Image (cartoon, rainbow over all chains, first blue to last red; front, side):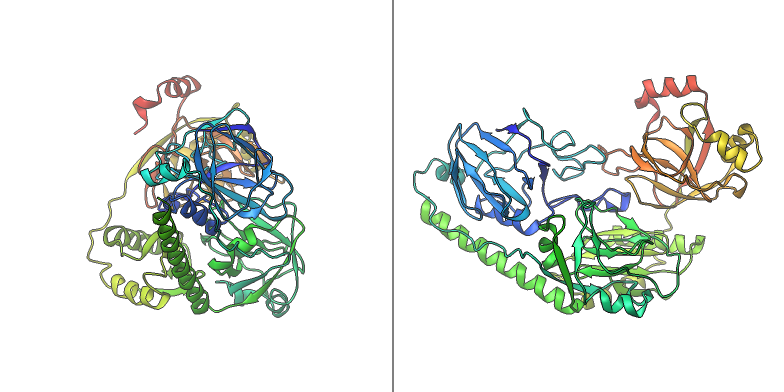
Length: 324
Length: 232
C-alpha cells in the first residue's frame, strides 16, 4: 500500500488512458508523458499499461507499507528516499516504512512513480486513469490528498525476489532529453490552408510561450497572433493528443491528455507523437518553437521509438534474469 | 458517396463524408461507424464519429497511413451491405423552470412568449442526436424550433449542475456532468445521460430520436429517489 503523507500540487493515478470510449464523448485522459510512464513500468517489471502516479511540479510525500520495487521516470523533481537523493530512470528497492519525497523541480514539470504490481485502483471503462472533471477513475475520481491509502497490485514472483534483494541496481536508462526551449516537430493541421500567409509562416518561425492558463487539458500558447484568411464557421470534428487549434483570439492551444473528444476550432498543426512528451514537460512561461515534419516522417520516428522501447524491454528482462 | 481521406497527425485518419450537416450525411456517419464496429480492423485503436466525419485512430506499427487508407477505401465499398441500424426513441423527462431552469423566463422574453409556450414548443419538437461530444454522453440535438432560440450568456456560468437542459442559439442539449457553460438553462432531467458503470456509458447514441416530456417537481423528486426503476 502507498500512504500519502502530503498530496503535492496535483498527484493523480494515470495509465495509458481510456481507449474506445471517445465515441461516447468520454475523454481519453492518461499520462501526459506516456513515454516516461511506460518506461517507469518496464523498470519495475510491470506491463506498460499498469497505473502509475503522475506527479506535478510540487511532489507528494509517500510512505511504503511494504518492501517495494519502484521507479521514477520523467522530469527530475528531486526525488529522495528517507532524505537521500535517488536517481530517476532507475529501478529502486525501497523498504517498508521508507518515505519518498520530492524537492525542487530541476528538469521538466512531471514525473511518474511506478511500483511493482501497479497502483491497483478499480478500473472504470477499462482504465485506471483519473478523469478529474467527471470525478471518475483513479482514486475516487480526484487528485490525491493527505491520508489517502492506495492499493498496490500483486507483484510477480520475480518482482518479489528483487524487492527483498540487498543487491543494488547499478544501471539506469538514459533519461529522456527534455529541453529548456524545445523545438517541437509538427505536421500542418487539417485546416492549415485556411490560415493567412503570415500565420502559416510565423507558426514555424517564431517562439511561443506556455501561458499560465495551461493544464492537463491543453497548453495555451502566447506569441504571434494567428488568423484565418477569411473567417469560417467550422463543423466540429475529432481532435487528437497534440492537435494545435486556434480559437478566435489567435492564440494557439495544444490539446493534451484531458482534451475534449471533438472541437470546432481550426487546427493549424498536429504535434508529432514522439515529441508530445517535450510539450507535456514544459512549465508555465517556458518557450517552444515548431518545426515542420511530414506525416510519413513523423510516423517513421514513432515506429523507430517503438522499436527502441522493445529493445529496452528485452534488455531489462535480461538484467532481471541475471539478478533473480 | 465519395469519401475523402486526410491525416489527423501520425496516428489518425479522417474520413470526410460530406461538407454540411444534414440527415443524409448523418446516416452515412452512422453506417460507417456501424461498419467499423463490426469489422474491427486489427490496426484500429478506436474511432470518433462527428457531424460529417468519422476519425479512425490506428496503430502505425501495424499499418501506416497509406495501408490504412487503402483498407478503409476497400472497407467502405461494403457500406450498403450491413443492415441499417435501427434508430431508437428515448424519452427525456424534464422539470422545467424554477430552480432547475433559471433562464426559462429569459428565453420566453427573448422570443416574446410566455414560459408556458416555451415549454410547449420544447416538448413538441422531434429531435435527433447528431453526435455525442463536448462532454461524456452530451448529445448535439437537431430539430429545435427557432421560435425558442436564444443566444448564449455573455459570461458563462462556472458551474452548471449535471442533467440540466439548456438552449444555445438553435441548439438544445443536456449537460451530463457538472461543467462550466454559457447555455440558457430551462430545466433539469432526473435521467442520467452519462453512465460510467455501463459498457456503453452514454444513454444516447448518434441517430437516436429524442422526445422531451414535461414532469412536475414531485415526479422529478420521486424519480431521483428511485433512479434504478426508471433508468435503463
